[in-house]
Image 1 (cartoon, rainbow, N blue to C red):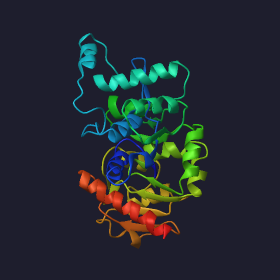
Image 2 (cartoon, one colour; image 1 turned 45 degrees about the vertical axis):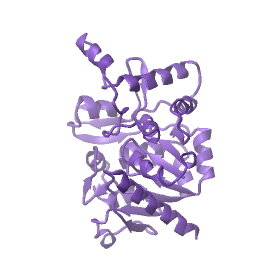
Image 3 (cartoon, helix red, strand yellow; image 1 turned 90 degrees about the vertical axis):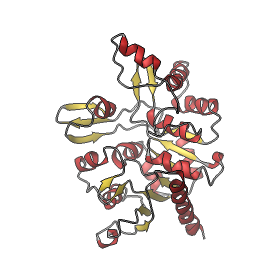
Image 4 (cartoon, rainbow, N blue to C red; image 1 turned 135 degrees about the vertical axis):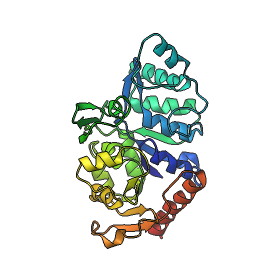
Length: 304
């Protein structure tokens, strides 16, 4: 199964899929627009969250490694050095390993494969591109890296536009699309997590040739988490499940919305779009499993 993922909603869905499918059958194409250099090391937050999720070591906050310590970060702060991001000690080892591999001349995709092996992860985790394509946010305080908007400025500036960069599709991502007839878009932020993947050359065309199911990250007009409201409003999208459908309308076949969004059919939706109602909250693994079962049933029904 092929899943497009950001750093929270997508991994929650993957957690459910892992209870139903062999790990080696899962492939995730992951947002790298949030990537950032921190103290000389490349941090890939969404890629790492996916890896840690598959390895069953991700924290309940959906970033970092469970039971990690922060002694290095705390010591740096004590000495007057302010890191851009709070990085755990075990998590930092991943970033050091990645950066050293990149300095040896291999690609981000190859480095990610080696990191997966180091955690005994059998799923295929693919960065959306090997290019460094940091997403920036244009605000009333100027243009800034998305991580600065989220961490340094605590999402307080008014967002005018989200600016993903255009990366080159890797051979591995191209092969993943060619090997899968169906694609599932996890309930990640459509603009800043999935929109970045859509900006990679060739991805939209590949999705048009696929059967695409997306999980809405919006329930009754409110995002489940993160800055989706600010980003969707900045791009002129209604903060509703149908706003998500509009963002994906060029290729979307099925949109899974929460059972509480019962009025979706009364609004104008993209032509040919099917809407399926299901509980999309995934606070517990049982909820993730139930939603994953629904997604698999939709794919199976299409095959039948």
